[in-house]
Figure 1 (tube, rainbow, N blue to C red):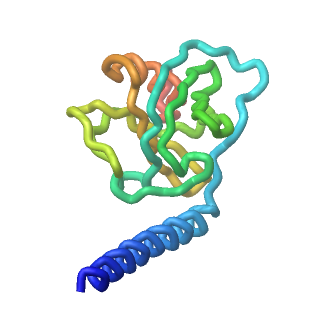
Figure 2: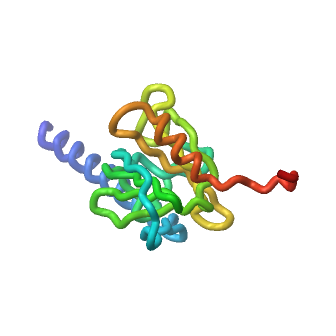
Figure 3: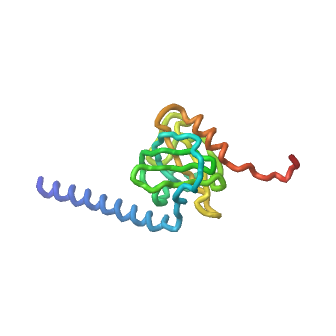
Length: 167
C-alpha cells in the first residue's frame, strides 16, 4: 500500500511539472510576436548607473499577467544605465535592452507584480511601447536605497507631448 501511495505521489508531481513546462512554452510562443529593442545607440552618453533586480514585464495595467518577451522572460540581476538617449537594461547573461526616450510612456512606483510583493512603492514601473500599438510594464527593484532617484532620472527621459499651446 505504501508503494502505491509513493507511485501516485510521484506521478502527480511529474504531471504537475509537465503541465508547468508546457504552459511556459505556450506562453513563450504566444509572446514571441513581441521583441524587446536590443543594443545601445552609438555615442549614447551614460549619465548614471543603477544596480537593479529585473522582476518582470506584464501587460500594461495588469501587473499579474506576465509576458515572456525575450530577453525579458526571466528574473535577473543587472544594471540600468540612464543615457542621454534612453535607458539601457543590462541583465546578467542577456543582451542589452535599450528603451529609447520615445518608447518610454511613463515611470512610477509600484508595490506588486507577478512573483513579487514589496514595501509600498518599492518597485519601479516603466511603461514602454513594445510596438506602435502595445504598451507593456517592466518592473525593477533597485538594489540599494529607495527608487526616488531612479524614477526622477527615468521621468526626465520621457519626451514632452506637444499640447498645441504656444510656449
